[in-house]
Length: 65
Image (cartoon, rainbow, N blue to C red; front, top):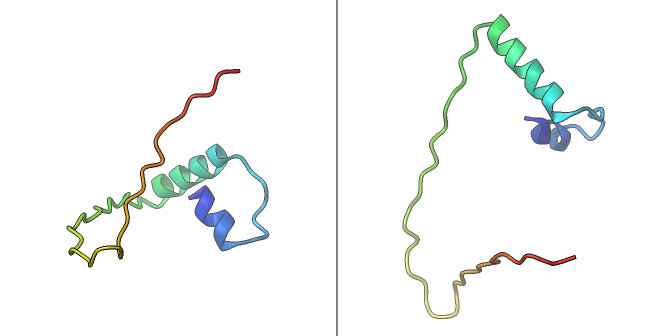
């Protein structure tokens, strides 16, 4: 929610994300607003011709100080 508010309003004040979270919880409890769960759909991507599709794995790298 905090990220969305920052993106939506460029003049959004600088506050801690936990403050936004606590406010949202308070509003939900005060007005009995249920939390909605949105399921993500994962679909198989149709095969494209050779060279038209790529898969990238950024992996993980641990740097030593």
